[in-house]
Length: 319
Image (cartoon, rainbow, N blue to C red; front, side, top):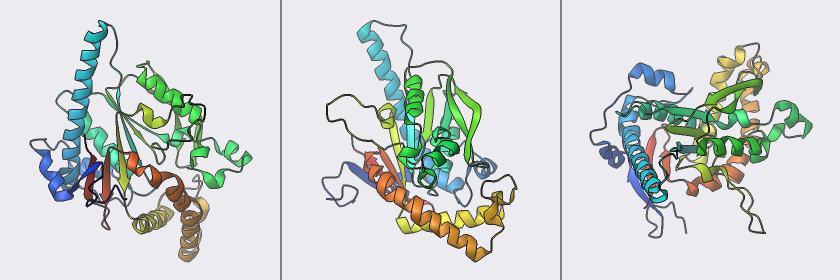
């Protein structure tokens, strides 16, 4: 049984074409400009205002309904416990999916749209990159070739961060990652102080981990999420996008002498493409098949992209 097949009667999802989904926008206003979209989208991601109208305004409206329902439930619990001094915890949205599939663009666009709701909520965005173990440790433990796999993260730090956020703690710190040096920046942190909404983006954020045999509670990252989104596409398409992005970076960011990947900018095009193919096959494809794709069905909403890198289908978990 494929629960993600639109014809499967036992699927927990409802399926919509992009055109059907766009109708759910209703009167949600477009609050972004073309220039802002240019700033928010990642390299090689063609998302534009039309895609925002088609997909993201309806998604913003749906998330607004979920946030409002969460706030109503919180007030009802206050009354139930007769505890008016309890602080509402942030609504956390998890965004998962493969490398090169467009998670970062989705996260940034959603952050801007949600922050511009009439209620002007405080919206923060954190990626899991900063929680990767430092390269020094990855090299010591022979994990550099598994960077991005679940065992390459400081899981304890991830759980402490999300637990702090969901406990409504003040000034919870998250480490900062540099894509230039391809490493965590020592001693540098970003502080998250009780946002109304937190978007938490990363390739393996829906990874459940191993279940305990003794029945003890083992928290997963997704236990802290109020809503989870998975960005999906065919494996062949993601492969194509990854290679295209690598070759573009070779002509841009990799040319910086301080870049960890600067050496690739000095190679011939054929040699660089061969490196990219090796990185895809030996690291990113394995991670996709072993860890990322198996978590897809744990999402509340799946955005499936087509060959043009734009969303073609939306799957929404039934209530």
